[in-house]
Image 1 (spheres, protein in one colour):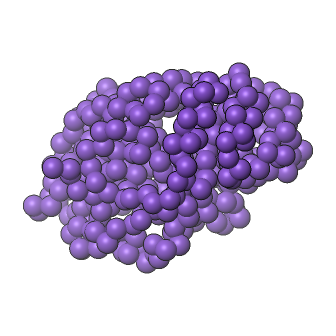
Image 2 (image 1 turned 135 degrees about the vertical axis):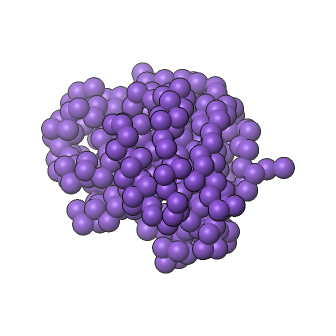
Length: 338
Ligand code: MG
């Protein structure tokens, strides 16, 4: 099988700010895996949080020798090989995993959700993300997001109270809060969450720095909102260790190396009686449509990465009033735009 890849710069509709960074362009690496005349699409959206850039993704992909594999159904062997080439490189590994799954679905002529026996009508609603910003911009973004029934609000900067007050002036819809590790002490986290309990918030994502798992467990004993791990929940082996500090996990293909491990995380979290969310980075419809295949198994979805951009080169899963419309197309269900 033959792997090719190239950088693609996704343009953001609005400058996107979270507690640790701000940007207008988000570069990704698009991947094509060709075998027996079928092309599988994949994508890596590298995250600096995990030491990744477009350059590290391309360097990793250049080291792969997929020509040694002649049977495209041998996902376990192929992905075990990819995983073993070097530590880390989660998003580059996810790109290969997504492309292989897309290839496999196309080869058997089935959407992955159907191949896995899932009912697309069970997919949860997806939230729409509002980044950290000034009250004027926040208000405009909330109005623009009118069709979305659930908003995910980025906090953990210097103006949390102002952001929530601004949003609550405009809408009473359900909010989910993502602090992106921005509350640096357990006392601050408890204080913020206690206040958010009165503001119609459904859960809190990653309140504290990932390295302070004990602090997060301390917070969890003192608040009434569920806590969902994101920066603490990278790969399969992380899941059991999070049971005391969090009520749920946020799975992202770009952290967990793709659909194969993502599916294992779902089952592990179920065994741990944890809630399961699937999230995304700023991504094209390739990675978003891949992640969407798993959603009928999950409690929460946050798959707005592609709709935050203006130049998505692919057509894939559609979002209508927050509903993820899984298509009856083989593989991950994407086509290149003309
Ligand atoms: Mg998050």
